[in-house]
Image (cartoon, rainbow, N blue to C red; front, side, top):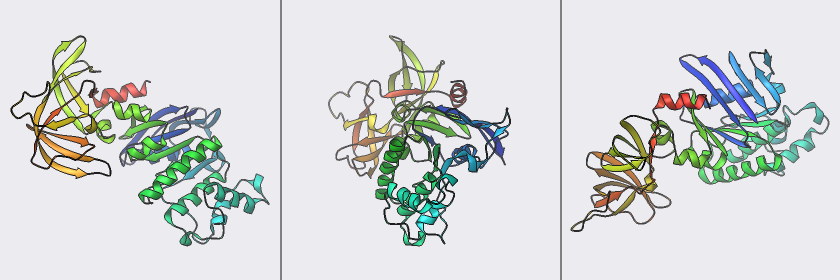
Length: 360
């Protein structure tokens, strides 16, 4: 079990986070400036908050109420910071050896070579950072983090400097390494695709606060607020008004749609989100009757993807984003758009969501 709470102020920014995780891989996710790196620094001991608590399992590393503050070099938290931060004048083996625990004294070279092999770099011990690719340097940095026999790995945007194919391979290797060694890992990222791949639990930070946490699929399907919805790719956020009720379900007029949802907040005005892949897009009705709940829209722009395409649509005064797996209609084409039952999700006001997350 990982338990983290930290409250501090740095300039005009206030951090006040609290979360627990029983999972092997926990991801701190959010936009730039959300407080992700500060939270990781509090965990590593590089930043000591006036109020805070950090524990890995039964080991308490920080408890400001009881005056406990284990210094960074004794926390055994293997940190990989943004960029690899390798010593350019040392070879890979010496970089890994740096900071190795005394228990390995006299066996440092053998241990370093074993760790390099564990991260996929056998035989790379004599190479200097200048002789390594960006992905190889990240692997050396990971081996150095493992050299302290860590209780946990703390990774701050570890793959941001490498290209897509290398990043994908590093993600797979990291998951395998964490699972094989039974190490808890906390990973910072602002990329939701990466968060979805790496995280068993995602902790969403916005403005220095935890606004939602949960399994990646749950956060993607049921974001709590409009901010989280946009961060996780639920780009269609509509304001609506409850116009009636049917079998305990709210009927909401959210232009251009009439939707049936189960709002989590009371009141007549609600916000609704719909994921782009949930929108149903077909040929315009023409002479036939429009499908129940369907509306006419015009294609504004088509953005090809590796698979399918993102299509921007104008339906009345509302702009929508849809993802289509096949050949998309050309810009200017009239189409019919509808929302399948269960695809619309009601959002909570930002302040209420934050308050609810804190009390969980």
